[in-house]
Image (cartoon, rainbow, N blue to C red; front, side):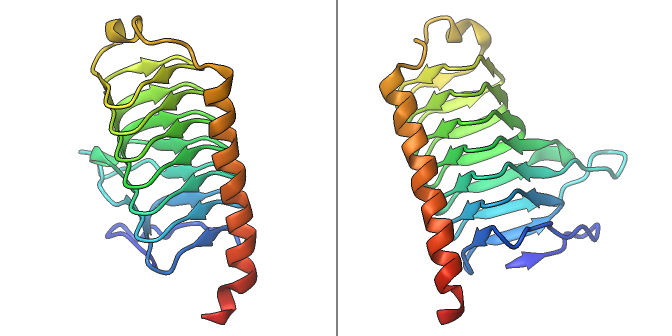
Length: 186
């Protein structure tokens, strides 16, 4: 469902994107080309700051927002998801937040008030908040990272983890094409 927010902002969605009919896209949201948004995902840009302003939630081209993902922002803060990034099932991205290109955010993970550098992998059931994760970092499953000092203990992404992230992104690009082909059959 595509709908306006109370400020009157309507999402911008290109015809090449696939949004599952059960997903909710609300307000000041800008979706890039060939984006896949899975069942029951919610992307909601509807809160304003004290001045009545809000930044957009932007999803970069060729990215995928999988089943049950929630993307929202506190007080109109900006949320950006880069190109070819994968936000896996039931993850939460709460802004302000910037996620770089080719990032993998694992199942049930939560990111809040942070920057995640390009090529990074945040594995399943992890919490990353109030941090600036440099490019090509790997945050292991079930990690809780709450400040930049804790990042010094996190290893760089290995090539096998990086290739996994790329395979997820490309698999979901094929899903966009497949679902776009059959969308009128429902």
